[in-house]
Structures are given as C-alpha cells and as structure tokens.
Length: 173
Image (cartoon, rainbow, N blue to C red; front, side, top):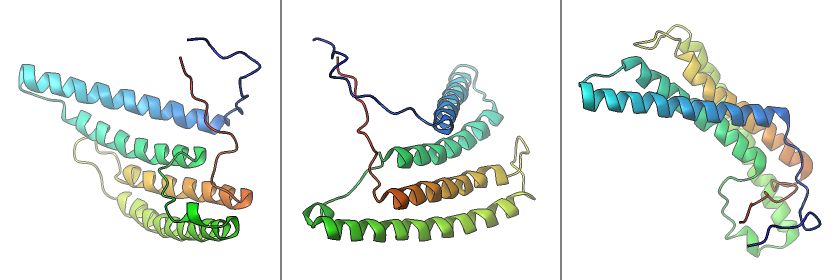
C-alpha cells in the first residue's frame, strides 16, 4: 500500500504542553500499574507471597489514570457520544441541545468539585493501610477530574461546539 504524499496530508495542530504532560503521566501510570501487578502475580504463583504495597500503588495509579484520561478524552472530543436524537434535529435545535448538555455537565462537575473537596479535606486525616499516604491523594483525582472537565466545558461553550477543530489523524498502512 502506498503512503500518502505530503500534498494529501492534513496538517495536525500542535498539542498543548499540558496535554503532552497528561499523556506522559498516563503512560507512566500504566507502566507502573503493569509492573506492580505483574510482579505480584509472579510472586503469588511462584513464591506464594506478594508485595502488599504494590496493590495500593496500582489502585492509586488506576484512579489517577482514569481521571486524567477522561480529561484528555474530553479535551480531544473523543468521548463516546449518543446522537440518535440530535442527528435528526435542525442545526438551531442542535445548538440548543448542545448548550443544555453543557449546562448539565457544568452543574454535575460543580457538584463533583464540591463533593471531592469535602472528601479531600476528610482524607487529610485518614491514611492508607500499608503505605500510610493520606487518602486525600486518591480523592484529589476526582477533584482534578471535575476541575479539568469544567475547563473543557468552558472551552466548548466559548467555541460553541464540543467537536475537535480538526479530525484526529489516523495512520493507515
């Protein structure tokens, strides 16, 4: 199969540095989880033991991975969408439903932000069983998720659409 020529290639916009940092964090979190779980599986089946702290580490990394991944997916406009109703509407009604959905998202994220902040405050005095880190560290993931989604929603409202400005590039070989 032939590779596309440069005249057919669509220029992709540069990603913001914070998106690169988030993607790097997700890669490192996933690698850390895989190593922690793999080591524990081998230790359990071969030596009939495990490293208990690895379970806490992988759990904490998973929570942060989901939170950061959700923000990145929302920023890219790649969350799963349901358009059975809106695809049959006129552009004017489509715009109305867009603003209503963004308002619902903002309300939900404000509630999540408030609840997460309460959990972070409560978690400052509670500590994990094995490693002893403050449980606020886990609750802070939902705090970051709510704040990140509010930023994405504000950007969508400013632009008037949740769709990415350019379609994601797909490499075909």
